[in-house]
Length: 288
Length: 128
Image (cartoon, rainbow over all chains, first blue to last red; front, top):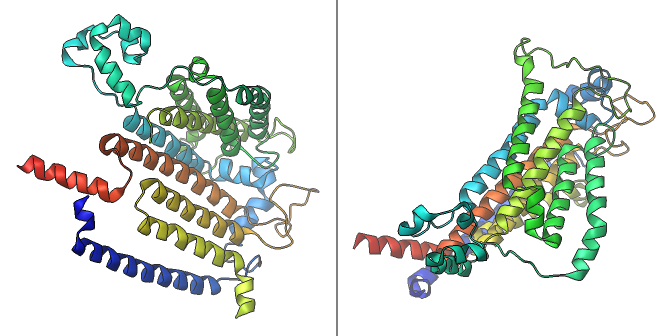
């Protein structure tokens, strides 16, 4: 790092720091002055408090049947917005897979002998292909292969045995009650996903892989996105002027009410849970 | 003046948090700390939106006591916007972290200056 200790570079770095601090102070001052011009905190004279919010609340129950006005807003009036958000999550999963699922290719002369097991690259496979032993050892040094056995942590396992079922049930409750109480697909999906992560950390990655791996998580995400898309995109064929579904709205307050919102909440929850888990399972390989 | 500041307390805290996150982006060399700075900026935006949506004396937008009057409930739109923001920030954070993992695998360091110097050295070697 000779270049960093160079005198000219040090001077430049000092100038950068001074200019940046002045810029930050100016930014803080201008932001605070702008904030002081806004309508006061918690006041009802806000420009956002207009006919749109009034409409969402006053005719929300008749039109969507959801007791939770926010759920009715994001999954009925603004359903395409939520569909876009779910697609953003799906696209992020794909990008992370493209970036992190890359492995060094096998040495060329062994590539033809490559068996499906050899791609996994565990201990038994390197004994099957003794020629590739060096290659696998090199990979292990770089921690690119995930550890097959994790430490036998008694406290973590015992706590997880009690906690995981409750976490999963609470997540399912938040998803299914999304139109009745605070919560919905996004928060419930995050809870279910963190339950999966806790289970896979404490009981072992390979046990969790049998239940949910990257492939099945991708399929579940795709199917839920397709269900969402088909459930909402029919409005394009009816002139895109109304978003009513054929499902009766039912009595507001019942669990089986509010038409499509329950189904869409389940779809969004599945997408978020699978995304959270696959982020974790992709990131746990490698080290920093 | 003091009363005005007291009236805009949440907004000013959000502005200061935003500046803290932005200066993390500028002053930190470590890539992970830069990502933490971006997350602090996201949190300041959520705070600003949520405090703009709240109106004193009103309750969360969930039907209670059968009242369908808009004066009873707070504005539901900022809540929906915060939801969008959280989803986008999660995706962007995951993307940035995975890029950091790739950079670390190649250059074995998280310091941005060292990575840039190694890139420059590689370029010079390839030109030779």
